[in-house]
Image (cartoon, rainbow, N blue to C red; front, side, top):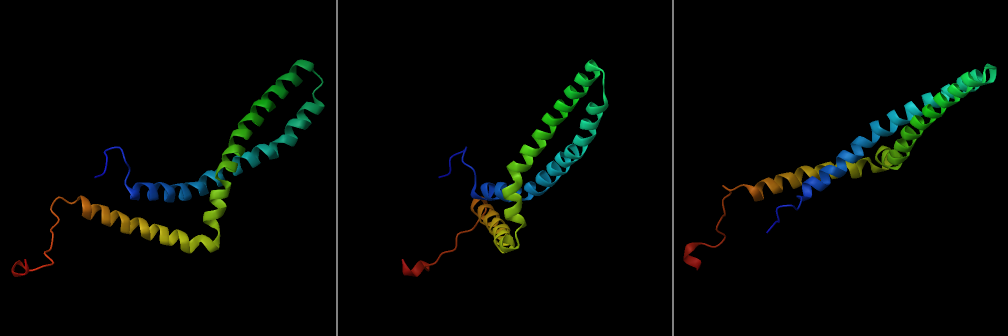
Length: 130
């Protein structure tokens, strides 16, 4: 008998499929943002280079530092999802992923059948055989 807190196999498979699907936008969006920050780096360097006032230059550096920290969060998120994104984007793995989605569908049907309180049991042996 299944314990209350245990998860159904379909839930675990579904979570994995969701992770594969989630990896694409997570990776692509994080890389896009990190690259925008990288593109802006040269602007920061030029602004600091031409600034002669010490206090203003320190404020520029502080703002740039904060931006680099924000960039790091997005870059780390991209790295976190990169291998999953590449795996599920690989043409060789498309068949596996399609089969996994089919497995999920079949597993959900099986679980629904097993949980149906109105399911019928068919006699395999006639009454006269017993």
